[in-house]
Image (cartoon, rainbow, N blue to C red; front, top):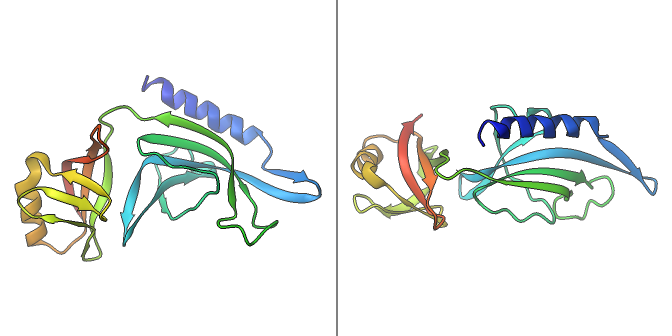
Length: 184
């Protein structure tokens, strides 16, 4: 299945490239473009934001953190979304985002797929909890278990003020399990 996913994604990107990027509808011009939203969100400052690829970056290794609101889109963790959005800024500046879903392809990621989330950024902890007990919550929304890294995590918290990034896998209940730590 993993070997077929890159072929499917490449076919999807090629198909999207062939399609027109602009349409004229009732003398109004709408711009359509593609966004890929990853299966997890990134903790930045006091909130979670999307991890995305846009336009020609789709299918590559580079992802960006973006604070987006897309009308008619409901995010569910554990899925990668390939979305065709319609840019409505030219038509109606009063819309909440200016982006509206035109088409969505939703793909579940394999179990135990790892991902990285900020735990400390620019000197600020993005988690709460009792050090040593392992009862942690990222941005008061997602619980995480430090697993067999509780002692290492507690020591890291106490010994540095640098950025800390956790490598996680998702538990079946939606919480995260810590599998690794990085300091930047």
